[in-house]
Length: 435
Image (cartoon, rainbow, N blue to C red; front, side, top):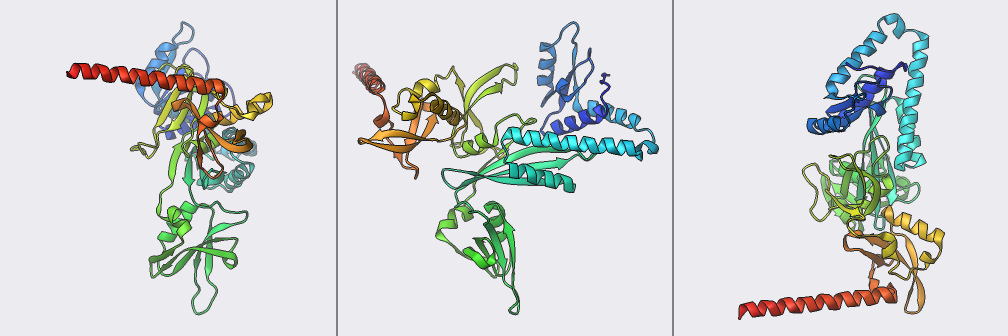
């Protein structure tokens, strides 16, 4: 049916990869039937049969005959090859085999670490992942917190162990924008239960506000939700008496009663939107990708992408994506920046960093002149309208025209006058028709 290379453990490696693809929604796989399959990179997986057949047809050659089959079929045959390679209990108990299995597990750990690094996870998050993998938990998740212009973005990575081996896979990660005040160093959310008969109570720690609030609302009796290093150094956020919430601080009501905007991301072996980009997008910002691929044609393209948060989430719980193709849409970042008097643009190194930050959806601080004085403002790229937004660190929007060059301002005024003339002509034509 297909030919495998001579690499030890290749059948298991390919089966694990295909099982991972199934968890991501894929059902079909395409391979070159005229050559050996030597790694997972020789397999192309697709969600539906039509996409697989289109890919199969496009890449057909005389010496490279591609075939598309259900992933389940290939997994079945790979499993048979695994069993044939381990045909006796003696091999299963062989010390050399155990050493190979251990080495493969370490390779699995290194693959996950490389994947997390590529996505931009913090060193602390990667270390926590490694700790939990070594513990052997079948399922686990690790989280990290990203700074936001308002509140914070909570990121959670979901890992799962294969049901047929000790291999782990990163299935997905989520980003959630919480508007509550970020935790300070060594602080936690605490659910404090009072003790009985004068005895000391208990305090359960949480690092994510959503987890803490959800657990608090499920409690019965009298309990307190607080923030602090421990129960002795707490700041009360909410209280419950006889199973009913009777107090929530004013500053915490938004986080307590509201639902944070969230999105599930499905990375492909470390490729896709990074953690930083995803954290910015869930705050409403646009990011630039130059490695997007057209699903039907397979052709690469570049675009600015943001979540369509105005329409809300779809049936899958995610926001749809809005894309502004580059250069077709017409938002040329360097040219747009040249319309503004931003001091960093005159220094090549600072300009390069500024453009890179904006493409990642960040809102970097820039130096501009206002009322004869130099001030620092946050800058945002708005590809949809071909503009840049300026606002103060506390979120107050500034008029962008104040920071435009004379030439750009003149062009803007001319365009406005031309638009006004066209509008007058349309109104005159309408009046003529009416008479």
